[in-house]
Image (tube, rainbow, N blue to C red):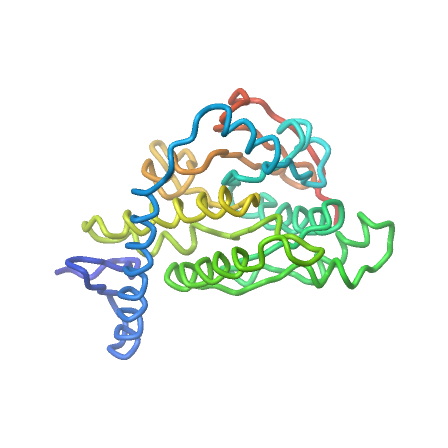
Length: 294
């Protein structure tokens, strides 16, 4: 078999091959994959045993448990009729340097302050900045440094999809066991970025990479719904036909998020535009503009 130009992982017949990896690293990777297969079987069992709910039950659940969380940007909140909704998976798509991470950090600070909630931030590319979080906290709080707010924003570095599955299952078990105990409920899960974890496993011709991708999406949606949290993930752009940019991860992923938002930034200034690509209750194509302060 020819070596992949980008060192992609090929998953075939229940095994994992990563072109260019040394043998000890390969064994470690393989152990991660087999452990993840057990997680995937659990996810599949959950999918097969989802209870039937009628319209009234869904409406009551939405009204009682699925609140809207302000992003901290008035333009975005107006566009989304309040902000991010608990129970939904929202995807933020944009090219490099469009402001995706800055928006995520601002959302984290705003949820921790305005909604007095805990935020779990999965950092996949060393982009989490505690100084930037502190800046946003002071900005929102009127220059007041709030240690409690800062301590309620939890960051975990995750550099492959197998580690993410482990973290998400630990998070699920932890939050379910806690229930509503304590004075600070988890309100938001942020993964910045989901595409950097998924892209490496999509190489090769086998279907297992796509199965892992859709299972990751299903697990994030499951956590959003069952734990009543808002899940926000970021995705980068790739070249499409004619050189036009399009969201990464392909057609299989496109249908997974409840909400898809496209972010862009005016060249040479701080003004950003965000538009709706997909939303269960709002029209696609609507646009809002906002400014990310330094």
